[in-house]
Length: 329
Image (cartoon, rainbow, N blue to C red):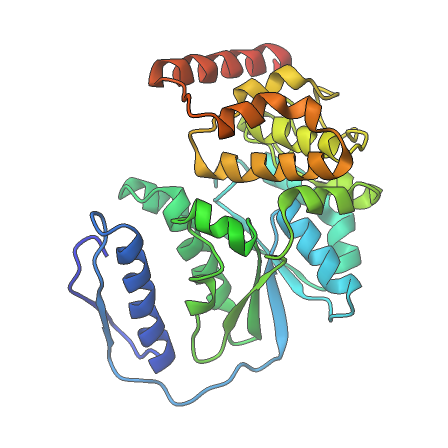
């Protein structure tokens, strides 16, 4: 897509796959015309019409808030338990087997309750994309779906939990997975369905708060040194705590640094659309629960015209980093 032109596939490809790949390139070139161009996709003919050998679903599962909520909701709403797929080489480096095994142990009881077979794939796709300068916020959707389609002979549906609601997608796009392009990943035997794109992150946490099994499973920390634990001081941990507090709920004991501290909100980088989306979510939950007074800091930051300078943002990031180092060793 950077170069435009023709993508030649050395092998046969379904007509649907070729057509939808071209549509995906058009969408991305619309979002980022200075970076990407539409492409044409060709292959050495088309395979005979094939269907998957099974009617099973395969769901991408990381142990984070989105996939945990979506899997629980899917099964408890009466759907058949899916198989789950966890990729080693994205959130966890390929060489770091110990942390990945710890994640698997942490999520094993939850997976046993809500899924059938657990599948693990080791992939270097993320590192290869980084080598060619493809940012993770763009490339991760291509990595995830290409891994799902390795199993299209046995599964006809690939499932992914939404990061955002459909309305939040309008704020956060371009983003690697979203309600618009997810459904364009389709081949002759498998299609993709997006789960729970009608529920915000804060609402997911509010519903998970009473489920001890789900809570002890959750792993979402940005601090790689403590994964799969949650440090309690990184921006993801801070806003997760804030979402519980906004709902008037006790912050669960799933963080190394416990408790909610309002002053930590200053570490959230509101120059990022994703953080604005999550903070708007916090404010909406707080208005409903009557806790808005505790979040005046982020309300002022979002709705006032004053924006921090680049230097101020760097200083805030540095302060947050060293606070995390100090509190988490």
